[in-house]
Length: 500
Ligand code: NAD
Image (cartoon, rainbow, N blue to C red; front, side):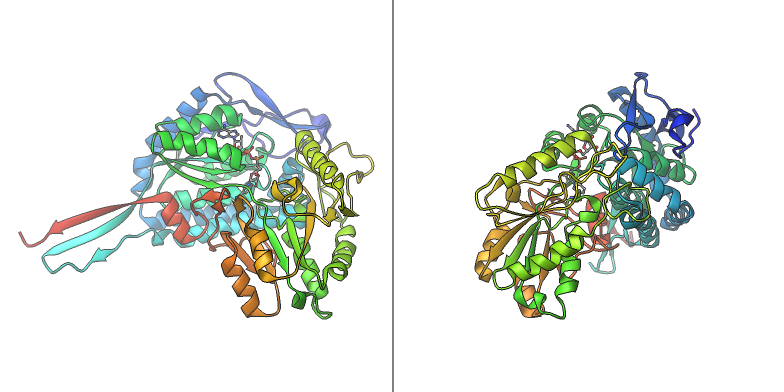
């Protein structure tokens, strides 16, 4: 089959975007296809992708297994050079990737999709550059001994992706796994598979057949089968904690490696000094960013529990509300849009239900309610930014991951109290601390039970940093070079007697 990975005008007909198995673009053996619907328009089918089956997965694992010996045997420079070439090709196509991201995920082109596309390039470049760092050690055990370790690839890695920022999350797994000498089978989310199909096309232009395989399909079919498949040596999963638990169980039953990047309900703590007159605007901008409003709050690291010190509570909230209410919700493809669409009808309904639950609690104050904010002429799934104050840390909206643009505000008075509330969560992915007093900020940062704490900034992950969750937010680290070594290699010790 041929593949053309751009979305034409709706009247051009629905294109079929096949899967990549063993270097060939193929439909599912089962013959079924699934519509990919535009989150921004609701009624527009963008393309169809195959509804993969377990038989398709078997084919993909076989291709990845066959490709493994030659790929793992390459000099690291060759794998690194290939990753760098892929980075260059992705960079040339970065605007196409950004536009497709906006179409496929509903994330706004200017604020989200372009940065996601740029991050993908940066991640391929980073792992292309550090490919030689997957290296072992030598023990100084005397002149008649050579005792060394090799960091060998795990084998075939199965990567399962979510829909919220597919390219970025693919970028956290694919180049690292390939740099370490593994081969891959990747399954994108049902709701936003298209950028990953296009990514597969670029990767396939540069790697030998079978090194990278893509199987589209339902999580309960292909995803589940990946967790159980004896030919997959590691499952690298990013998604919800609920599904992640099932994946860990299935992988654990056969003692396969697994890493899990899961959900979050991250604390965002503002101390009084961060709301002094000369910094209050900057802190509010940072809190807005940390909440990931411009990704419709659909981010695992969203700082969605805002703890405001009582002394600055009302004043800070006023500044924040002014900034957040200025965000423009609209067509993801329009340059002036700040916030795009929620991924699908089900997720939209779930966000609305959380808002309804929150606004029905006694004592809640609705600072902003974006529920009725639907851009004119668009049939998609929209929700404007929503801020609910006067919230208690034990309410459902403060405990569960809403994965929508809903920020809950909780007052605090002393540090022990705010640390206890921040840590009173089954999640522990990210956290944000805002204070001009670095001793105070770091004191809080060290006490918070989260895998990633930011001080006085709210942006996203930077290439090379450590990233992963505490508690129900996950197990394992893959993003940094140390994480990639831990996540995509296994150590072999070799002891040699010399001079015989
Ligand atoms: P999800 O768990 O529903 O799906 C994630 C992936 O798992 C999809 O590809 C899906 O098809 C697949 N899947 C579904 N059922 C499966 C099963 N039984 N076995 C194996 N795979 C299965 O999550 P989602 O709705 O796509 O994404 C949103 C969630 O992902 C949120 O909870 C969010 O916090 C989390 N997330 C975490 C990170 C992180 O880095 N920690 C990043 C992005 C998203």
